[in-house]
Length: 383
Image (cartoon, helix red, strand yellow):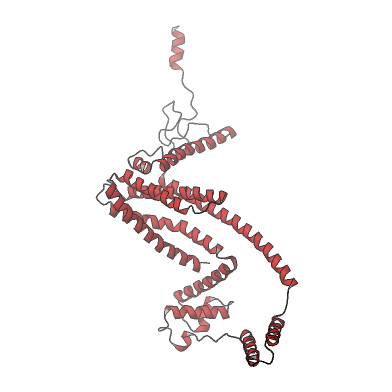
């Protein structure tokens, strides 16, 4: 009996390693996980079962945190942000990581759906072009014969009339106007003025007209030929003029679809500049509250994430069921969510929250308009 008890006391639990393979933290003798980095105390050899186990455990771990964040983020406005800044962070996905993931998914879905629409419209355009070609081939008639026929019918309707001569004259004038070359020679500002006196818009007009006449020349060659100095800014302006002309021609050919896609791609990037600026304004609006800039930023990123989530839901519903006039529902729903989030996060009265809500939304719209104009301009001159 004593011998058995002695063996029981000295029996050691088998461990895989004496120290963590990830960070090197020593084990005391029985840990299943490292107390420093959290990695499981497992074999150094990577077997298939271990790989699959790590894959699914990592996925399920993120998945559980995602749903623990996603559901209250939508159903309880402001609560996730409040809990996160109060220290309850392990249960939630990092707000910046969540915003990044949701925004990527949103713009990815937007791009895929636009691609599907463009393919469908392209197929429709091909079918329409075939129909138009068949009609044109069946009814092809030179313009001169059409004019001659119209002229003959008009003269037949008013034979030997006082207006007969006017009809002939008017038809002849119309033909001359149609066939007349209306192009005029552009007078370059640099030819009539010095480089120091040519203003910005005059310079852009020179670049635009010269590139139209000489599309194969590089920026350096064009500036030398025009007489402008080969400075960095002149080359930059000339290249942006080329890009703008190319984008304009492409927009005319595809109805602006490529340009719109480019604008949306730039918007996704510009929000990383836009949101921190807006957060600074929000901090000034709640300057008497005991919140740091980063705590305000957590609230802003979580709110913007909800904006993308709701917009994505409405967009997918509209894409699937072709719903009409649902934009106002989305706007009202998000505005209500924003008001409740402000009230639950900052804990102020309804009147104060409503006043600051109105001020904040107006500033947001102003900043959004300015940002959109800048993004649209950059998208138009980018290659």
